[in-house]
Length: 186
Image (cartoon, rainbow, N blue to C red; front, side, top):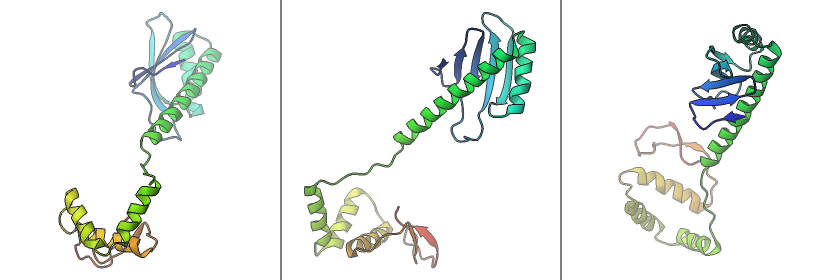
C-alpha cells in the first residue's frame, strides 16, 4: 500500500521490496509518470536510486533487470512490484487532481427569490448609474475602472448577452487603445 503521509517521500512496501518515491509526483503531465525511486530489499542496506518514467516500457524493462541484478531478486517480482506501484501512483495522482479541482472550482451564488427581486428592482431603478457608482466607490475601486463597470452594467441592463471578450476602444483601465482585443467578463 502506498503511504503518502510525507508529500516529498512516498513509501511503498511489499513483502519483498521497500520503495520510496522521492519528491512526489507531478500533476500537470498526465502523459508521463516521471519519478525518482529509491528501492531496496527489506531490512537490507543496498539501495538503488533511479529516475524513471513509469509509463515508458523500455525504461521499465531495463530498470527491472537492473533491480534483479543489483538487489538479487527475481525479475518477475521486480516487474510486478513496479506495475503495482505505477497503479497506486496513478490512483493517488487522480485523487489529488480531483481534490485540486474541487478546491479551485469557481463560486457561484444562487440568489433566492427575495434576492433576485431586489436585484431586478435595483437594475430597473432610474438612477442606476449613480447608485452603481456609489456602491463601486464604497467597495474601494477608484479611477477609470468604473467606466468599464458601467459598460458591463448597461449591457446587462439592456439584456444583451455578454461574450467572453469583445472589441472596445478602451482597456479595462479606460485607456484609449483602439481595436485592442480584451477580456471583459467571463
